[in-house]
Length: 218
Ligand SMILES: CCCCCCCC/C=C\CCCCCCCC(=O)N[C@@H](COP(=O)(O)O)[C@H](O)/C=C/CCCCCCCCCCCCC
Image 1 (tube, rainbow, N blue to C red):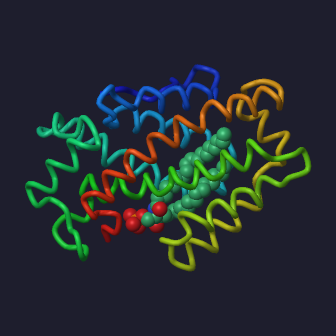
Image 2: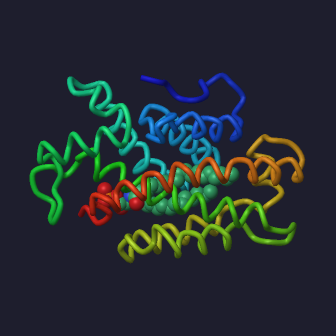
Image 3: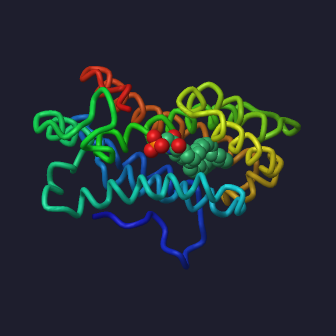
């Protein structure tokens, strides 16, 4: 099992997180779960560095990451090597609640779908950040991206709490500094490189879930 992309005593760099997403995709265009999870761990670390107001979000993401890690470390771990092999295994063995929450509230397919929806938010947010100008507000970019993606699946209370948390995001310049990539121009260049990697992982997963009609697992 691949461990977190950065260890605690290394200086954090968001670029390394995105490099991990690049390692997700195999030659056969399958998405490796170890690397997918490692990428998410790095993102959650970044989120934690933004303040305790994001704790409830980081906690939910971390618990979903842990579910996936447990599958990888479990007796059927090999079946969870890629998202493709996981979907095949869980569907063939009736391990997914397809219409209502029942016997498998934490199936791999369901859990990964939640992270997958969050990856869509990330894709939209990165694109906004990349094309933003100095005066644009990260809180606005974040909530617009959220409203177009994750919010469609969240109840009122979560949407409200998320909106409040977004208001505390640092201004663009400080946000770029926390990313630890370099000058704003270097950040923008890095975002330009990172986006296609995230998009490819998102699209491969989206196509797979769509093909199996499992985009609405409750
Ligand atoms: C270069 C830019 C770097 C940006 C780095 C961003 C780092 C973001 C890290 C993590 C994103 C959070 C992922 C959250 C996963 C949420 C999964 C989800 O939808 N869970 C809900 C449904 O789960 P079930 O109940 O069905 O099991 C759950 O109810 C949600 C709970 C918490 C609220 C989730 C709000 C998500 C907001 C995402 C925006 C994060 C803001 C980041 C600010 C930069």
